[in-house]
Structure formats: C-alpha cells, structure tokens
Amino acid sequence: MLQKISTDKAPAAIGPYSQGIIAGNMLYASGQIPINPATGEIEGEDIKEQARLVMKNIGALLSAAGTDYTQVVKTTCFLADMNDFAAFNEVYAEYFTENPARSCVAVKTLPKNVLCEVEVIAAIS
Image (cartoon, rainbow, N blue to C red; front, side, top):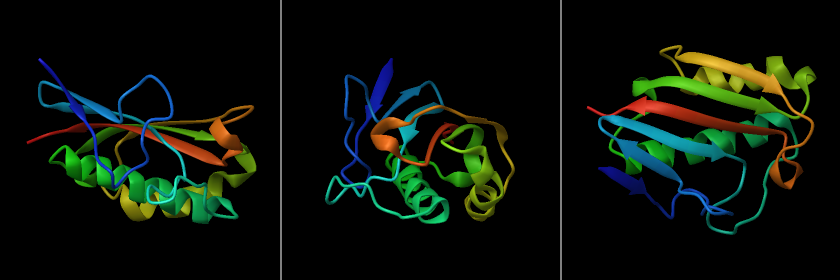
C-alpha cells in the first residue's frame, strides 16, 4: 500500500503530484525547489541561498516521513547552470553527510526559473 506524505513545512505540490510517497520502507520524494512554504514565494538570490532552502524543504519531507538525511540513499540534483556546481556542492555536503548515491545534471530551465531542484529517495527505519 502506498502512503502519501504531506506537510505544510514544505511547499505544497504545484501540480498533479504528491510531495512524497512511501512504498514499503522507502520514501520517494518529489523534487524540491527554493519555495518558502509559508509564503509560496521563491527565495534566494544565488545558488547557495536557494540550495539551503531546498535542503530545508527536503528535511521537512524527510521528517514528515519519519526519516532523516542519514537515511537518504539516492539524490537527483538539477542545476540551471553547471557553473554553480562547486557552490551547490558546498551546501549539499552540509546536509548529505553520508554521501548517498547521486546524479547531478544541468537542465535548460527549472520550474519558476529557480537555480536548483533536488529529489531524494530515503529508507525509513
């Protein structure tokens, strides 16, 4: 049975999808962008500021699912500009201390023209 994850501490879905789904003992979280869940507005002027808000939103989803950053097994990171890779990694490394498997790609455009988006798959103990 699938269980939908929903929390007001992360941005509401802006389309026909869930913030996250638990299947068995795994969380599959939708991509998070730098939206302040309280205001619904994009925040952050540069990649580091936006990445920090993305990580905060991911943390809220992980918490709502009963897990945390140490249980993340895979991330997929999308950057609007690969020149932001090093700065993004600085912020990323503060949160993903267990070094999960990862893909990181540059894309032409992200929703709402943000600089980064991150999705995660995490184990639930």
